[in-house]
Image 1 (spheres, one colour):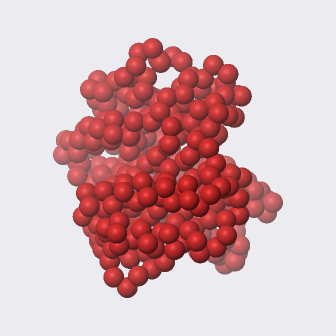
Image 2: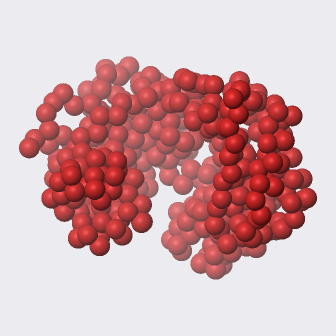
Image 3: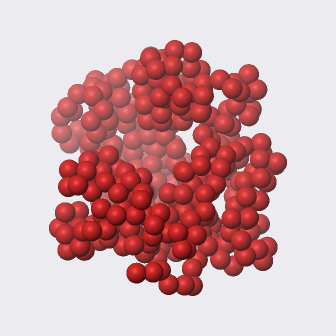
Length: 360
């Protein structure tokens, strides 16, 4: 079975250690040193790690305590999301010089459809190279890129020659590339799913390809249908320049665990202020309010309530937050609280990237 043209030309651009690199850019004393954005040696979670820190096994979402154990000379710096957003908007302006079909995934990565582009350049690989060079020349930051016929393969490819590299998977190379790819490298296959696949004797794309659509559906549900198609190079999701925002949230990780609802309400009061600010700024309203609770043992719980009308103001939704807090007894002391809105009134809008806030 061969893939049939016409093929789209998709680029996935992924900034290298973005938050940490911005910190090293702004503070020359940090360059060449292991840096962790977020967390501390006594508390908190690492948001991002420089490549110098990654050599010691430091990764995002790792506790600051563990990061310090792995890399005793690591330097913790507080996150500055306003600065990251500022840089991200400049990177995005570069993208728009080439195509209007830009789908941001976060502050530091995006898909670009350059099948037809503003430069009239038929080579997606050359466009990716030029974009990466411009990001370096104009912002002194490094980016990696993956180039292929769809978003799935482009994203997988962008990770192959990181940092500061790119990989092109041409149409005639797609099927062989996917057959040789370890299943844990497939975007969307996490540790749990990979372990399940390994137990079933599925280690590569070729192994995955031997399973019928019926077998994969039975084993993995809707995801099984997805796996059946992507291993055959079929992924028709278009680059969507205006992604539908599904939720807006604000949350805080605490320096010390909280065990009293009184203290939790004090923190939730401030989180609600921030959420109201974001809702107003984006002119968004929602019907479903969710309280997120992460306990000291890292287990997580959410409690939600949906109203029959849209809410935006703190005075409207904060009573619901309090109700959700007292809805059930707490399982343990609490390290993180968050409030989010879903069921929004927005249909098509520019994305708002809401990052985890740390209580330093």
